[in-house]
Length: 94
Image (cartoon, rainbow, N blue to C red):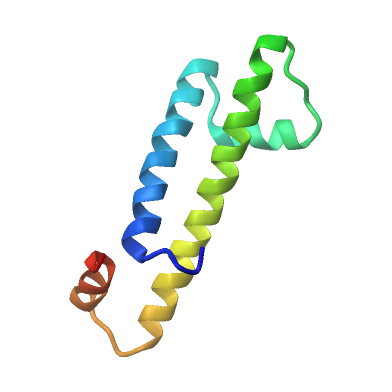
C-alpha cells in the first residue's frame, strides 16, 4: 500500500464507501454497527447472508485501512512546510 498515491487512496475510499452503502441499505445497519457485531461473534441468521457478510467485512476492513493510510499520508505532508494548495498538487499527481 506504500506505493499508492494520495489520489489513489482517496479513490479507493470512495469506491469502498459506495460498496459499504450498498450493504448498509440492504441490511439496514451502518457498517460500523455490523462490523462490531460480526467481529464480536454474531453469525448470519440466514445462510444466504454469509457471502455478503464476508464481502462487507472485507470492504469495511479495507476502508478502515485506506482511511488510516490517508491520514498518515496527509500528516506526513503536513509535517513539511505546506499549504492546502501544495497538498492538493501532491494529491493530484498521478
